[in-house]
Image (cartoon, rainbow, N blue to C red; front, side):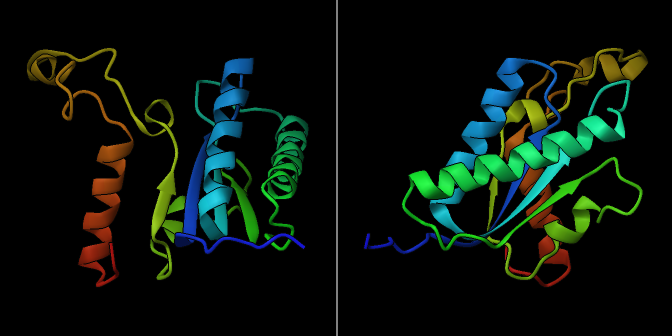
Length: 160
């Protein structure tokens, strides 16, 4: 019987993107792998970004893949008791909004990537041009996202 290491975090939010390429899938798997190794409870937000929404069948299929990947990671890391997982696809009509997870009292970790949490202004005009490529102003990322989450959590008297 393998000795389980103590988890560093109580509750982690893993933010994934609906993959459109194999690189996207690899990035999502890396995020899940890292998150499972360091937390007791995992909430996975699956963002469906881009101009077109995925079909419901494609979304359901990928959510199933996420659960399967998490099971594989849990088995590979020797933590078969890791089962406190909920996946929140953001394009389903009754899905919980991401802000519900952001404000969970026990949330103490976020795992994602700049390309998923960030934003880049591609069509700035007028005064917005000065912020289009300035790091932290015209380009967001994981750090900026977490800083905004922490500011909101502080406002709500929640721990950062």
